[in-house]
Image 1 (cartoon, rainbow, N blue to C red):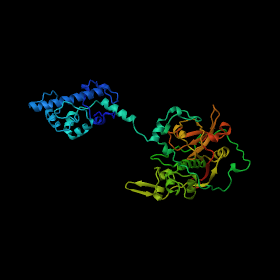
Image 2: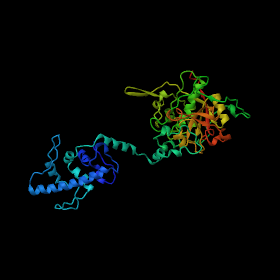
Image 3: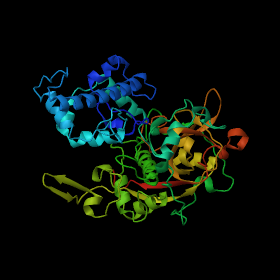
Image 4: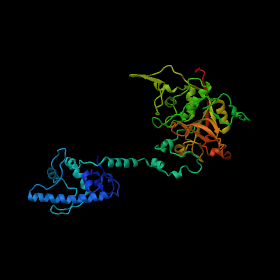
Length: 467
């Protein structure tokens, strides 16, 4: 392998492959070769090269005067390449990289790295003959390690990846353990693009008030509730990653379909098969939201009017596509893809907004999980790796998640929401997280829970055509 010096002031010299013999001539043992700027053998090598250049210039003049064979004791290449005298004769025709502003009669030879690259490129055969000895694999490996350590990132990515650990998290954030987690090498720019839009209208379609809407409502609720384990039955669908295979701002789809999956499972009393709705079909056909964002209301309207389809109809590809029969529900055979005519549709009957701890708990306990909007922060995106999250923040709403229950920490007695995210199992607690409720810090919890209780949605599902 060629050893290429890093740029440390040698200018064009860093493009020259250094022969094995010249390094040893400088007195450097193989394992002492370095590419750092303070390598003492580099200066020795430079001095030896200058001395060698002077000797070669002097020998050439003597050869012309005496017309004798050059007294050069250089070993020929084992591969049978040309003799050194033929190489020297050709070198006479090449602009010397070591001579500049000096006459032919002068013994003074100046170091001129700027001509080295030109000289070598002008005669590839000579370069091959003289510099065919390559540096050891150890030196090459050192260069590779140096390159890997200096891998470039965009300025924002670099700041996030290299920011001092003692500054993370800022006061008010409790995260155990502290880590960059899933997004070690991800761009915060992607995550900070709001995938959850502020609704431009009230998305509501209901025929009667909910139980928690009646005057004087007092919830009689258990201390803890988790739809992942109700009498040993899990009604919740698995967490997914909205950013696979490419980035897509589809949290509004995943958060909403996640809670609808769960509600279909609850309504059907956990009977097989569990519901697994297609986010891609909603992105293609809802007519409003896309990979650039949306709101749960788009999903509810689409599900009520057109019905939703299961994942097998249209697998997730994280892109905006056209809406046609094939992109609604299709399949392929060798040489032919076509739309499926008969497939199951999953309908939404009623839906509407809700907010506040007591209303959320009552709705979750009585009917199933809900979808909520949060103002995710950089600390939440990158640092959460488990535990009960709390952060004093006032970020604008930008992300949708599904709330499936609540609990109380047995040691700290802190009450928390149980929430499913859509960034894959590598993030958080296997794709889930816990966050404080509004009763935290004597009723100041809404300042510490990313606003999760301020804007949520419920929906009732229609199972009349499923059983």
